[in-house]
Length: 377
Ligand code: UDP
Image (cartoon, rainbow, N blue to C red; front, side, top):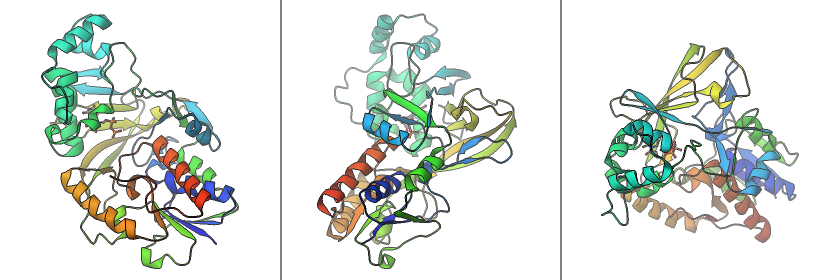
């Protein structure tokens, strides 16, 4: 009997592919008019630039199997994410590295000196940082925190860093050398023809049927051997307990004849600049050559019912509600909740693929799968 996959993002596409290769028939229903979810890419007709329609996605991983897996479906070009940030009238390098520290303080410190210098700024009375703010004050001190993190984070999350978990800042390293690679992972690159072409290749299998622009509600699921649901967890239950909170993004698109900012990502660390960052999409494909340019000014705000959910908030209120939805979901039969939206977690692309591979393996081993292979809590 056929398996149903709801959602044609990375989770859905990988699960569909794995099941199809193992001999199952798979129907994939996607509410949007395209596959690839929020990593969807599209070439701009006027400039020829490959646009990351829902904001920038850079593929990076330490997982050699995941790296091999994506290479089955796309040719990758080398790409290193080198982010800049504008603050106090200057442009600095991110993540905080020796160049950032020396420029910020007008010094010429060597690595050991910089380490000692920053340690002297840090609040060492914080032994076990719980919040974003404590983590920042403990590891970079108040000056760098104010210039690069506080304002940006207030804009990104709509709340004080004193109310956010330390885990969010732990995503960013602090380096006492001149390595300005944003990610510390072994493998990093960009699919040459975009993420949508990669996901289309995953779904291009004789046992997979894809229906675009086809939202599916649980009552309309029909007769399938199993359902993998990659939509929002609360959406499956008609939001009957309330809505799980997300941040959404607004992109103010503009074009430029030439090179607007000389890099792909320019962050704006200060609170009085209303956007968090500007992305210049042609720089995500440095192997291509385009005269014109497409840019996004990115704004973050609370996600309303009709908006696209991006970042799960996972504060105390959301976690309590999440617990209730998880309890409901655990009673469900014949459905597995997967991915960023299905498990309400902040997942990078490589983790999403890893989990989808593992989920498919569980199903293939036992002929069924529990509501959660990866627990939301
Ligand atoms: N962040 C910041 N300033 C920056 C970049 C990031 O304060 O210039 C904070 C912000 O709170 C963000 C977190 O660090 O949510 C993690 O950054 P990352 O770049 O991983 O965020 P992503 O855009 O991938 O969600």
